[in-house]
Image (cartoon, rainbow over all chains, first blue to last red; front, top):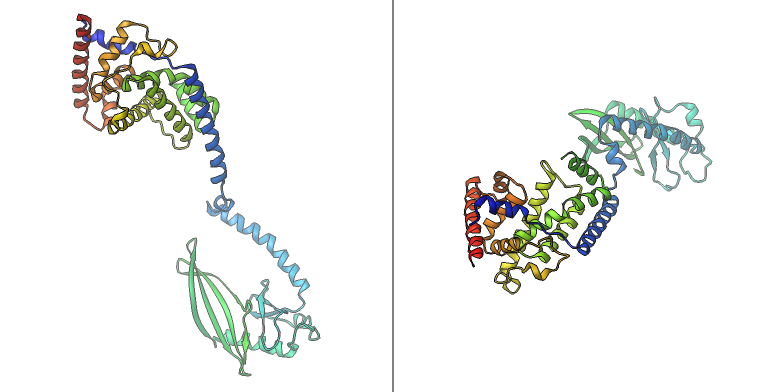
Length: 212
Length: 180
């Protein structure tokens, strides 16, 4: 008669030795599976550089500073090539889009400066440029009037849409100006808001238009 | 224990050497456990093979809070239980009436050369699966009743009862075989 202790001892003693073939196959398959999963992971989960940069505020600011530092000379560089540029609003310089012709005024936002267009800048405007149909005085008058209208708040603003990115709300508007000549000019405006505070604004035609 | 922790860490870092070492260290133990649970060496080998392949693929998800040995035993026991369920659903592959004959497996397959152990295997095959699992996990897997209770989602007292009933039945079966 076996006691319970003897039965327990017997069960503990029970051992199976796996075959060599089985051991080799299992190990080979497991190693292969591990290798495959490593390859898949490295391809699928390769970290996105933006995810890395945008993890902390400090990194975000650093990335933004670097981007700004790189873009600034580039913008000034562009300014050198584009001879026609005007200040239409405080801090915003626009360049005439020379590809636009006819009655359309096309402009794109360039670099930021401090203050409105001065005579020296106006002098850079070349009325003989065959690609640009606008005359110097006319352009000068338009931008002077635009500047005054904006300063006086004499324009109509239309809300277009609102986007949100990283907690910053970006509101898009269209500002409609009516000049004394009867021309109407529409300007695209973007405003960035965070926690109910305006943190930045910019605008331009960006291919916008002026119509009679 | 420290070696196991180190192996897990290396394995999670993608070390093939660590995986090989884990396998070499525990394959015999896991095959014995699976064989005792399934009463079929080939089926046990399949279970251990499948387990190690999925184990190798889950390095990043692996969370071993306690002992690696218990973790491996738990995984293999779960797979063995799944295998038993599949067998029950598919009666054609059910081999309950013919418990594995250890002598037909061949000398290289088994370290069991003892008549006594063959009797044990025959007796084990006649136990209900729940009782067999508790006995095997507790005595061979060195798992505590509380760990088995968590694994099976039942109370510790149920596990203790199953162990006691199973062991008594095993003893009577073995004594009956000896009397024959």
